[in-house]
Image (cartoon, rainbow, N blue to C red; front, side, top):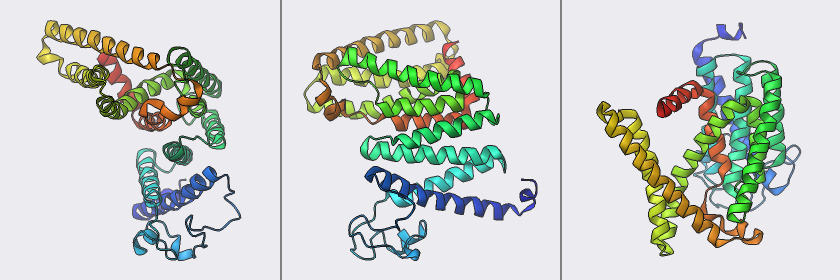
Length: 334
């Protein structure tokens, strides 16, 4: 790495960006062919609509999409925005990782880890599917990452974290079966937690889970509010609304402490917490009353987003800001 650091900064940045774009292009192949159950090695790239094989100049990351006007050169059908988006986000992430950790072995591993995050996020968004091999590769990379002591834990802690991650999601999933009539989390989420536990250890994994629940809630609750009003279930809609705004207000109150008025701060946060718990009780009762069986469980899902992306986004945030998140969490409870 020392010899590489002698290269001009602009050259390294350009190389990292190009590497990210090419990796993103490859990830698109991995994602789409993985969902179709196709191999990624021997078959040349082709249009998924007309099946024509693409020329090499139609596969240049980002540029081909722009030059072709977002349409297939053969059938003129629209090219999914997924292609340039995945390429762009991968290049941006690689660049951010490089600026954060430099030309190090840790940077290489984090780029691989983040590439796996993207692949799993997209498959979960598109088809609510986590391809098993992606999760197992994440586990292997995570164990090697910890074995080389590139993170904050050693290999023993990584193994414990992996087991803990898988078990806690399986336990929560089965609790959902008891209280709601269907799994609270999919099997893919348990596999993601398996890999994340190997990277972060069980203590930091708890922080990731808490953050992912917050992200999931803030993203999914507005959808559930709209759904509840459409179904003319005002009690459930207002319960969701109160939980949504209570979370935001609790965070704001904690940050400003109501202009250092401790009595007013304590009273306000206590009242908000009580009413939020009451609203959560109403929501749980409504879900339980539906008594979904296994066949309907996959069809309805209460319009929630898949949980995998929230979990992976939280893990990405914690790679860079874990210490700041811990400080924020401590300030919230102390």
